[in-house]
Amino acid sequence: MRLKLAFLGLAAHLSLVALSALHRTPWANRALLDPVLSRYANWSGADNAYTFFAPAVPDQVVADVVLRDGEGHAELLHLGRHGSELDHRIASLLFWFTRAAPVDFHSRTIAAFALNEHPRAITARVELLAYRVPTLRAAADGARPALEEFHWAEYRRP
Amino acid sequence: MRALLGALWDRILSFAVVERPELALALLRVGSGSVLLAKCLIELPYWRELYTNSGLVPWAISELQFAGWAPSLSGLWSALRGSGVSPDQLVELVLAGYLLALLALVAGLGTRLASGMAMALHLTLLNSAAVTSYGVDAFATIALFYCFVFPVGAALSLDQWRRPRRYDPLALGLCVRTLQLHLCIVYLTSGIGKAQGIEWWSGDAIWRAVMQPQLASFDMSWMASLPVVPRLLGWGTLVIETGYAFAVWSRLRAGWVVSIVLLHLGIAVWLGLWLFSMIMIALTVAAFGYQAPLAALQWLRRRLEAAPRHTGVAAS
Image 1 (cartoon, each protein chain N blue to C red):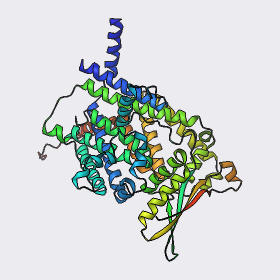
Image 2 (cartoon, helix red, strand yellow):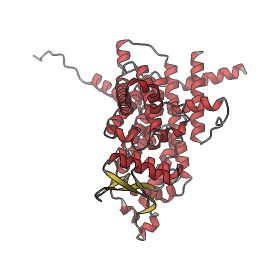
Image 3 (cartoon, rainbow over the protein chains, first blue to last red):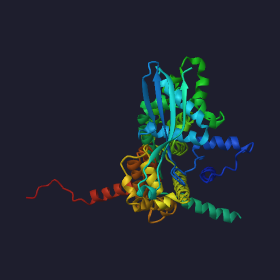
Image 4 (spheres, helix red, strand yellow):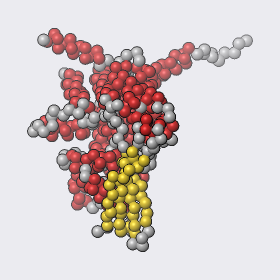
């Protein structure tokens, strides 16, 4: 009996896994099912979809922050440009914000972080740039990857 | 109807028969636990940026997605507000607890408690830094959940050494089959998702991935002059990922496991995604590749048994 219950539980779990992988959540917005299944899916990882870099590889977003202190000295902070574990996470963060949140909110968050890290700075100018990679064909014709600024804003420490 | 259900249950039981399932579960525990330990140590220098409320993203932003019912640092902080612990100290305590839980998990000491703690603390950190998470975090959640639910301390563990227990091999087998089927779902949906994009057929997906500054480990601009290389790599990725769900149930299993390991090693070397690659390798080896070390041990034992014995008596 215990084995049968275990089998039923695992089968239900795999069903959730398969549905989520297919971006299907029939339990969403249903009064009783949604809170229970959403919570379970969060704890178990069953709510994941596995379409990383699918169907395409998106342009990476990086952030450059120019910090100035009261004497006019400037310091440049690059976020997300390198290959450390921190950069992987910054890249995830920057990509999440370009999809999910207003760009201004995005740059405000970066400015708040940068000013917190550099207490002597009074202003922070945040530039958001997308790393545009040309297609293979264009690259064969001489086109080169380039950073393209799509938003900038300047903030002052309150 | 009863006969039909009986026959179905017999088929399920025969599917649950797996050779040495306790070894597969032990590899799941040790492999994924070791990768997560490495992840913890690699992230330690950046813990302030990643997890504190004054880091890259305030807790409130990351936790917006979870409507307040998921474990989180701000939830824990609210519960401990009167205790005198500062938010940064709370993060340090959670990280220390997570590290200890992972050490105990890898050693197989108090396995169920260790895996439960590791899972809870991992989710607490993840939910408060969700917007900086990527693939390794998703599979960490999956691996820790399975380590909690499955009897992963059934072999190669301090628990089993101190107090040996017998486990129902069919129950262990069902656990292994669940992990195997989960990985099949992962790779099949990943492969089909990629195949729906023209970039994976044209080679542009590989080209774009290796040219991103955050991912690029080497100068791969030469690929523009040899587009057949990224194109073949793209096709190879589609074949290996989509074919995984079918090949691992056939005679091609060993070769496909090697292929997926090589694919992930390639991702590690060329894209710098070492943690993600290592956890994927750990999961595949636990699910489908654990028999290789078993076969190697059996081969070694046969060689040792077949080796000529010296009786210690000198010839006169």
